[in-house]
Amino acid sequence: MSDILCVTNRNLCKSGFLAQIEKIVDAAPAGIILREKDLSEEDYKRLAVPVIKICKENGVRCILHSFVNTAIELHVKTIHLPLHILRALSEKEKAKFLTIGASCHSKEEAREAAALGCNYITAGHIFTTECKKGIPPRGLDFLHEICESVTIPVYAIGGIDSTNAESVRKAGASGFCIMSGLMRCSDPVQYIDRFGRGGK
Image (cartoon, rainbow, N blue to C red; front, side):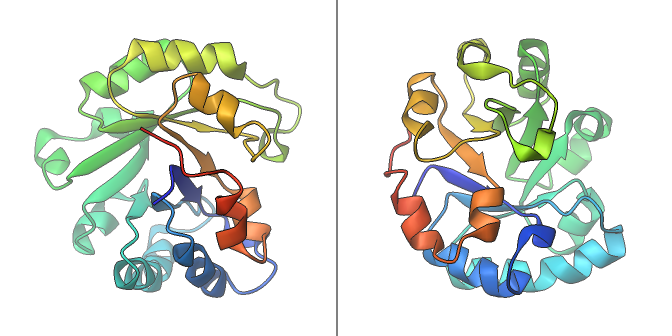
């Protein structure tokens, strides 16, 4: 298994989304975060069902995003949340999950997420990326500071590819999140292999 988390965006896929997910699970990523922010909860649930099935059949962790009730209803034990949703989560709701992740953009947010019970966080954006056009990247010093501020795993996100992956690892990250590269590539196995199989 690699140290890469795939973050989905079905709108970037050149072919069918589920067909792309089938290819990605063959590459054995650390997990797939189903992050389809433009969908209603009902539409998200409909999409989640086949994605969960594909992941389960291939031994890849499926991580649902934002929709806590959908995750509970579908018996998914791993969820990734924006910090404002995590803050509102009750202890009873948290207990429904084995793993909770959160998106963080500062040292203070990272520490807060850890204190609220997160098992890992994502931090970014680290490098220039199309997804955050016109917004300056936070860089490797920021990433190192985040990694030093918490004891839980930190996954870097934003503009990461095989040419800068090692610098991300050296900054202290346990791994990294990839969206565009995995959504668009024709051979995810080859794509992930170019990163090496690092991680902690």
